[in-house]
Length: 131
Ligand code: HEC
Image (tube, protein in one colour):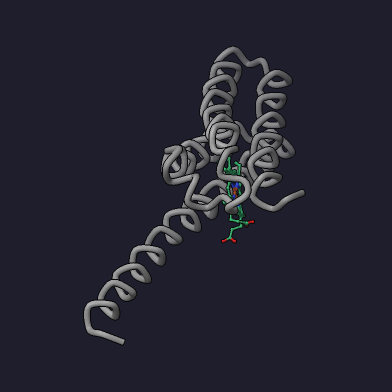
């Protein structure tokens, strides 16, 4: 292989690897956040719910740009980037709804917002994973 080609291949590998990091980091943070929210609801620990929702928000922000999301969609699903992006937007809205309901001590509504978040995770995963 010519040096130029090697260089291009190397750069591609590096950029793909670092893009992968963004997704894995984002997902790991959101997973941790969702676990905390669930524990918070089950144990009636509002602080845990608040902390968890911050983590979900943080992780979601890292993976909400349509261009970034599209990189992770299988070739035949690229046209669904909008639907995937909407799942990320829905998570961001749900975080707000959840916190507003916590402010109002409307815990059932807050837990519904949590359920909706979980559905939004599955919505995007169903595209990526051909569920
Ligand atoms: C916009 C799309 C999208 C949304 C929304 C989304 N994910 Fe993901 N998720 C992905 C992609 C892409 C992968 C990697 C492919 C795979 O695992 O099938 C992934 C993988 C994961 C993984 C496995 C990570 C790994 O390193 O293999 C976890 C855990 C995860 N997501 C958690 C979540 C949680 C929790 C939420 C909701 C709060 C969520 N995801 C919402 C796209 C999304």
